[in-house]
Image (tube, rainbow, N blue to C red; front, side, top):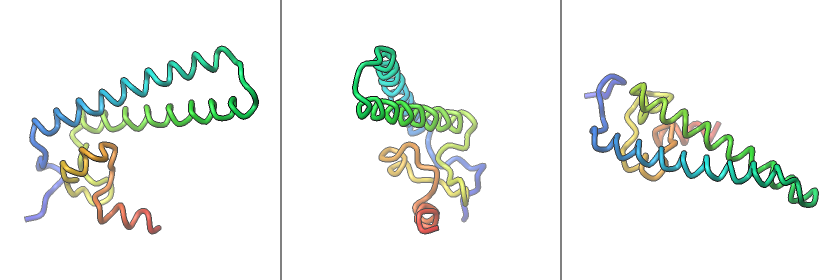
Length: 113
């Protein structure tokens, strides 16, 4: 029997655990971003450290956006499904890589492209 995008493959306990992990990561990243912005507001440092700070700000912004999108997918019921083939992504993979958007097979194809 093939899984469809409408059949749940993660239990409510698993989903709650993943939601909690995502929210904790989002809180940590948001606090980190606030610290970086405060550091940027001070404006001290050489050109090299300033460029590193800007790169860190951009990376923190991207991480927050990815976490927010994952939480949105979780709320919409599409979290944990491969963005390409809609197969359920195993809980074990999501615990290790909570931002995973592809099953292993599609991830390999995506990386090879």
